[in-house]
Image 1: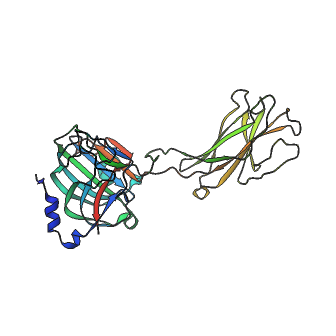
Image 2: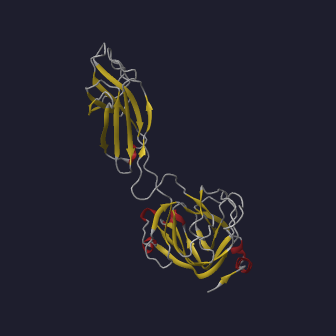
Image 3: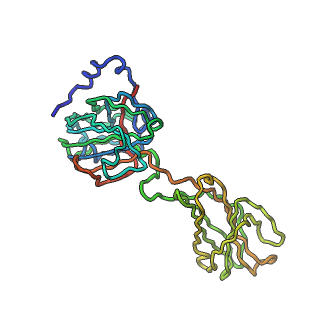
Length: 363
């Protein structure tokens, strides 16, 4: 085993001028002067043993002749006497991967360019007891045994993967607050959480009988990335009356003489059910074919039902609603898997979105 103490200064001084004049970037990209939106203090640097993989789809820069990674303290974590210096015996692997196919099998996440860039070594991690400010300078540097090249997501078609295998930690059980970023809020792996439409109410609807509230339609379009699902219910419509919903791709804005409100949708008529005096018409669902080109397009909806209380045409018209077809659910741009064993072949946790912010060098 080797011990790295003061090696950063020695290596940097011995490096050629071209290497000394390199630049730094972060993974995820563009967090050089931006604090992450969370922190991680109970895993890396805290547990006695670990195999941790992180995949980053944000790095478009070429990372040529990369010879180190470094970590920074989270800027918002409070002072903690437990976050003192520690010696961590570790190994580092870099590779190219694909976050869209992230797996709990560690080896499956290597798609290309896999390299053990740091053989098993003991690294001294700094004292992080006190806060060091937002987007602090990285202090814990791990120098590579060999240079590693990565041409970025755009040129390589692959995402950046780095992995730490921790064999020993002399301060196990003590928190150590790394800066952390989710990159895409609300993103998740596995079954996506559908995105809802942004709705605009175009009309108030008619008032039915003794109700004081106007006849209303409450629709939404949900996009799970493979299906557009229209869901709707109706309130304060004519009790016991069959209710139908018009949908349309155009706002008709059609005033009809004798009708209690303007018709905004007339293209297709969908049965919703019979209105209950308490619950109205319970939820109706309709799956629409998914087309990515339709995202952002408006869909108009309005309910109608026969209504003897109306003085003109005996039909009640609900509020009309414009629904803008929502974006696909966000996909994570950062992801991680881990196991509490450096020799594990499969992760016992993850994949989860987000990751620790690292610094690295590039030309």
